[in-house]
Image (tube, rainbow, N blue to C red; front, side):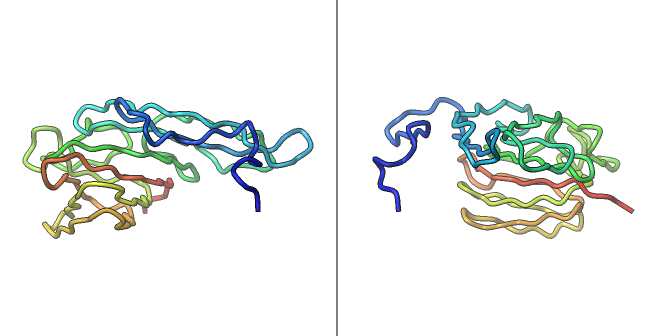
Length: 186
C-alpha cells in the first residue's frame, strides 16, 4: 500500500480549507499512455454552468457513443443535457428551492400545460434512464398522477423515462449527481 508521500507527484488533493465560489467539482480522469498503461490524465476543477430555471450544472462527462479502450481519457464533450441512444452524461447539479422548471429542449417531451408558466410547469419526460444520488438538501420527485416521493441525502433514484418534475424541499439548495443514459422509446 502506498503512503501519502509515495503517491504520484502528478496527482493533487483537495484542500478542505479552500473556499469555493459557485459550483466547482474536482474531476480526476484516468486514461492510457502510448504503451497502454494506466495514467492520470486530468485533475481539474470543473465549473458549474448557470441554467435558468434550474440552478447550476457541472457537466463532467458527455459522450454520444460508447467508449473504446485503450484511450487517452479525453472527455468527448458532446453537447446537450440529454444523450442519444448509447450516449451518456455525468452531471452534478445544484438546484434552487422551489419547482425546478428548465427551459424545454428538443429532447424533452412535453404535454399541454407542461411549458414554462403552464399549469404543469416543470413536467417533462426524456428518452433516458437517469441514475441520481442526492448529495445534499432534499428533493421531491412528482409523477404525472400526483404521486410524490421526497429524497434525502444518500438516497438513490432510478428514473426510467417517465413524466415527472422535480422540486427542492425547504429553503436551501439541493445537490444531485446524475448519470444519464440515452434510451429508446416505443
